[in-house]
Amino acid sequence: MSECTHCRQNKNHVCAYKTKKRDGAEYTDLIHRLNRIEGQIRGIKRLVENDAYCTDVLIQVSAAKSALNSFNKILLSNHIKTCVAENIREGNYEVVDELVATLQKLMK
Image 1 (tube, one colour):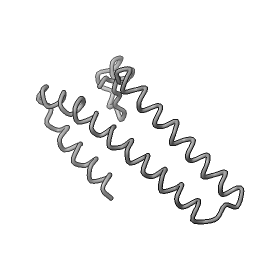
Image 2 (cartoon, one colour; image 1 turned 120 degrees about the vertical axis):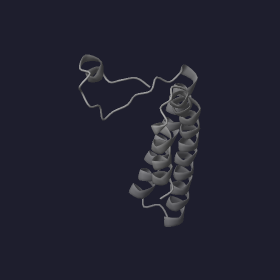
Image 3 (cartoon, rainbow, N blue to C red; image 1 turned 90 degrees about the horizontal axis):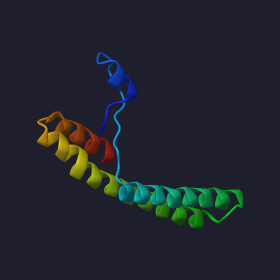
Image 4 (cartoon, rainbow, N blue to C red; image 1 turned 60 degrees about the vertical axis):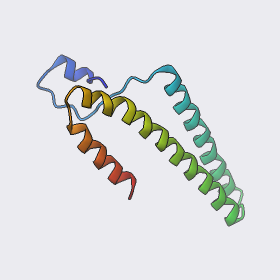
């Protein structure tokens, strides 16, 4: 993770945004997954625009939700293995509370 530009320029700046530099393989995988999901959403929109039968639309929505869930699992796994582990190694145990809060939001 890195600080935002304002944080580097002004140490008194309270940052509401965190960033993470992803390696090439992780970045490429996530972007490809998002592109496929985006295509699925456009396909669902076309189904609705073309008055497709309800169950056909519902099945495609379910597939898109499944793809988003898969994306979340991969992103969460990467987050734990990199950001969380790095913060713990540096003695920042607040990251565990942040992770717990994130998991609670994901499980709603």
